Length: 142
Image: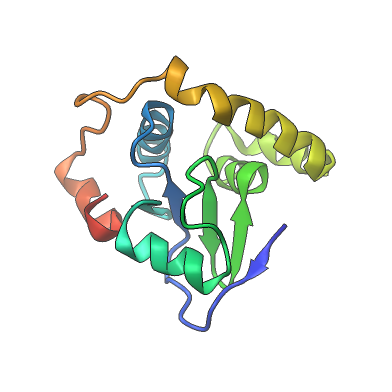
């Protein structure tokens, strides 16, 4: 479900991700590589900026199993966020077709992966290696 955003919407779509998750880190890097135009910006859910956004929209500030996409004046959560990001990337646009599936079904699959992600993809110091040109796309230092 999309949530109306506050009046100060970010200029770029912002992906909020779990900054302590190896899978999330790898996915952010995958989007960075496939988004040379710099459409997306990024912020760890644990950061002060993201925590403020979550509070402003009445969302949990402790549930880091949820990907959030802030897109203009809308917030998208879980599978909705992931699919809205992937459909804007070359070679992944076809995933937008999955948005026709019922959200409950998509989010069930999303939750199944989210519960197991840290076991499957432990965080490591090598997870997030940023190219210098990417640093400006991270809010609160990434």
